[in-house]
View 1 (cartoon, rainbow, N blue to C red):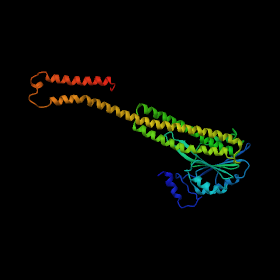
View 2 (view 1 turned 135 degrees about the vertical axis):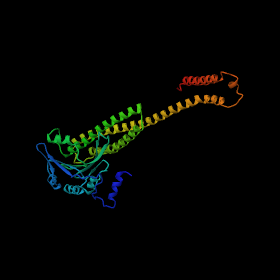
View 3 (view 1 turned 90 degrees about the horizontal axis):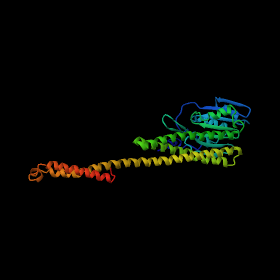
View 4 (view 1 turned 90 degrees about the vertical axis):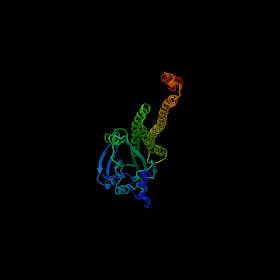
Length: 355
């Protein structure tokens, strides 16, 4: 049974909207970072309590509140009450096995995406849930753990570079989603390098370890596909739906994110075909190696069949065998027959290109 199915059993019998954290157990403290800005001013701080975020709800400036850690449900419940979020939205935020989706609640949009990371030491792909709440003048981002994916966006806000300080909350949400999609490309590049390495092993000397590596790569590719494929529908709904929370200028940028998502999906599908072909090549190469071994053993057995027959005939202990007593060269003649038979069969096999 999948691990997510086992975790969901904790919610059995509870009413809808009950906050139960479903995900990896964590003990670190929830960190709330606030960035409030417009074209002329900028403010950044770490909120000591959820109540400190209340003042940013109805400001005319743009506010980005990032929450690192969603395992403390009491903190999530307070934050949901401060910004008037639906209990079902908060329930989905703390349930970390959500499928990428976008839901319109009128005053805000709820967006779910998958944040992927690559471990260079182990080659494992981390998969975490990223939840975004897009309001009229604020964006809430919920991450399972503290990461550095959004650090370039923070630097652009601090240094007033690009359009982010000159635009509203919808453009900020776009930049966050664009950063998530762009991170997929770096992961795909590393996966491509691993696939090339496996292809080299497959051609030179395939081993059972190569087969295990191919299966692991197929599993990672399936996980990538499940994380990215629904995101295409999410971005499509964002730039096609007529929500007042997204400006027309931002929709053009969302179309660019959609194009990037399609490129990622095409690459994942290509990798899937390559891995399927590599698995077939591995099985075929192993079968060919087995056939070569069996052919060699068959040739050896075929050569020794007549030799065994001759040795068996002259190994019979009959007294009146003419080649034994009446002919002094019978032993040498027998050897000559066996050697001639072996050489003639080798020449025949060579002409047939069996050797």
